[in-house]
Length: 172
Image (cartoon, rainbow, N blue to C red; front, side, top):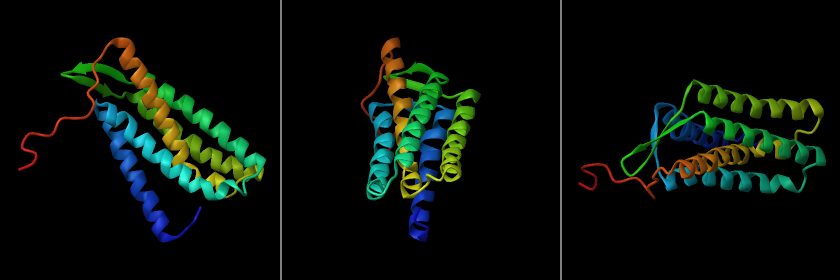
């Protein structure tokens, strides 16, 4: 990972954004829209693909295998996180609220991602690809979670607005 202060500041800003837009809002409860289910995972995955693209050419087979296992494990954690949230109808869309289990699974997600970094170093397969795929794996994990949430919404026949309505007084 590049230790340039601007890159670190960028990662910190993205981390704070993910914490607030995904984890905090999910645990306190939030109204879901099609846009909210798609935007964050797409943004993170795109940033992750761009970050990893340069390192892909020098990646070893071990790094690629570690990345594949990382993505599968974080995808499974995404499925489990979705399953621990409560979905209910609120007006013309669905309200999602996380639980203590959701929080524990988020902590496990962070722990697993950090653990894969240490495992790569211990196995001698941690190179530029391992450190440049943080956003990619997080985006995939949140994407799987949101895809399963969307599936659950469809199975229960709950509504899902295309996007949130503007707040009262907006545009003044």
